[in-house]
Image (cartoon, rainbow, N blue to C red):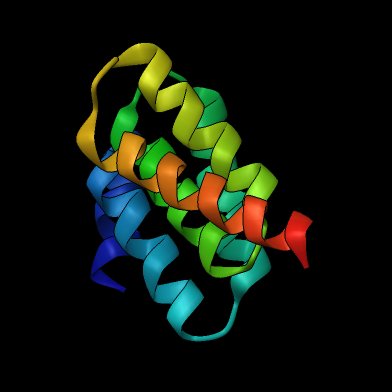
Length: 101
């Protein structure tokens, strides 16, 4: 409720958007969490933390293609971003194993 109140006062508060999506995800409202993060990414396409939050959610949901696309956007905006590069490496290994299976 506090997060909703903060967002009512300041709708663009990125940290609150990420927190609320995380709470929704943990409560099982995966689609709403994903939709909120995607909407926020669309509104703030240069925000790396939003993209990382969306990428992690997509990864948790086994949407490897969607997660990779978000991590690639992070690297495009911030080349050398360690978390995004590491995650892309893991995704590449995962996808290679799936191709071999």
